[in-house]
Length: 229
Image (cartoon, rainbow, N blue to C red; front, side, top):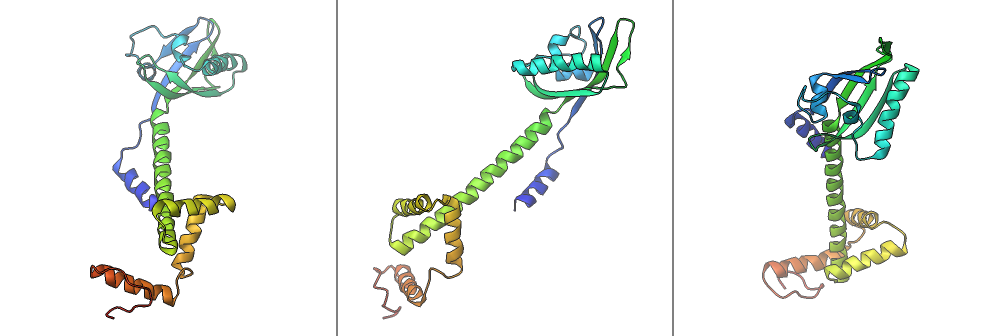
């Protein structure tokens, strides 16, 4: 069921747009060059400010800021491809999940020092889509478990002549004392009931009488009475 839903949703919704920008950083002069997409990912209008490191490392998490600063240092000193993913606190007030990728082949010497080239990637849409899928599945699983427990409660209400609260307390008692999860115990009970383990000829006869009486708006009789008697 969930697979069918996911397939239908994938066809109905557009694929999330992953934005990719390009940058160059002259580490000796401390000068950045950004394309328009980098500006947009950072929450800025293209060419609206002079590119600066402070925008690239902007994050509410101090550890993220330190990791971004560290990758720039390592890209300069090691000359190897490096990357870091972090949560950007963009200038437009939006938090975005972004990825910086420094390319090894682009770490060439400029007149003032090593120049780091790379990509700046906005992964926010991908993360949001995955999060929504996980949340939706959790809701579906929760609804399924609740339905199973409610069916088990109904079975206990019938079997022991209990009200709903009493039936739930009974199910919970068995769950706690036998160290079995409530939904698992409920599932076992429903599975057993579906195989006929909770029914016999006398029980079915009693239900025949009960269904006949309530359908005819008559007071319920004893289990041994037959319809029409």
